[in-house]
Image (cartoon, rainbow, N blue to C red; front, top):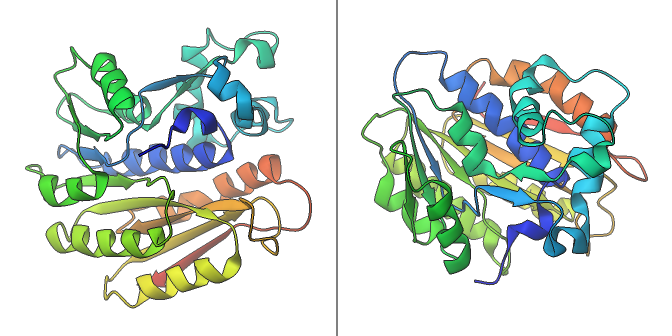
Length: 286
């Protein structure tokens, strides 16, 4: 496995994924029952945006930096996510491009949102990233770190003892056939944990492959699947990354109602050349 997320940390894909992740966890916590979060492709806990790796692509400049530079107020639903980043960067006073140096990966974001009875399981196969993750959370009794294939983790850790939880699935999409593997993983995860919430991230290059993915999901028989498409530019050139998407199984109430204003804000700030529009669609249910 060669994928290292540091090259993409804080990019538009992270912003969309992490904004929705924070909202999903908050919605699950509307009930008093403990929640377990499983992150199947965790990466590391936090990223140094000043590192050579992050600087090589500079994706964060067209992602999280633009969010903080936005001329319009952020939606209230984004406050928890953005306040964590502010706290990691000394409050982000002054020159934002200079002050913004640290970005939370999904492990650090999820951990910041846990209540005392909640738990977090982090799975990362890459040896260096797994070691960094273990150091990041080495004294944290609410977090466990595992060196395991992310898809295998769905079989190993579901259903959770709490019987209430979220599985974040964020595969690297390094190899052909990843959409098919992701579909099979969602079916297997749902079979083991039918009441659980699943949040799966994917890239958007061409529109045809996303349509096929959604068709496959709709044919699984899973009762409630919400699909989010977030292109930042037209998808007619499928040899480049044109956006990202999320597939949500059993999205907790009232997430579907809370998402539109957040997505409108994010798309207004993050979209690039050409015409594009975000879309939220129930593939099954509702």
